[in-house]
Amino acid sequence: MNNSDILRTIRYIFNFKDPEMVSIFKAGGLDLKREEVANFLKNEEEPFFQVIIDKDLAAFLNGFIIEKRGKKEGEEPKPEKTLNNNIIFRKLRIALNLKEDDVLEILSSVGMHISPHELSAFFRKPSQAQFRPCKDQILRNFLNGLKKKLRPSDS
Image (cartoon, rainbow, N blue to C red):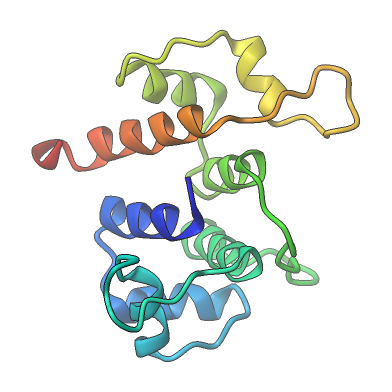
């Protein structure tokens, strides 16, 4: 999945309007105008489409965590310069305060059945032997499961 698809999907799942999107970016430390956010959300074929780079998506996800869970004491987290599916998945899980069982249930609601051990491997440090990279299929199914859970009439 590319960053634009992920951003559009999150916006759709949570039914965020442009001002909310701007506010989430701002909470993550990125001060954007509505037009800039709108350009991130356009389809690739549309005029003025702008690719959202990893650092900007990381800022959005950090802002999403702050919006959903509140500000943490201490220094604000810095957005990662490069993202992968594992980091995106972890940030979404943190923002939504999902436990292992919740994530497994969301995945199974769209026909993806994985074990708790497989799931925990996605959230380990890359240096650990049990770490596994999260493939696009897992992240896509997780987002589709969230869509099914949070917007059932649209699924």
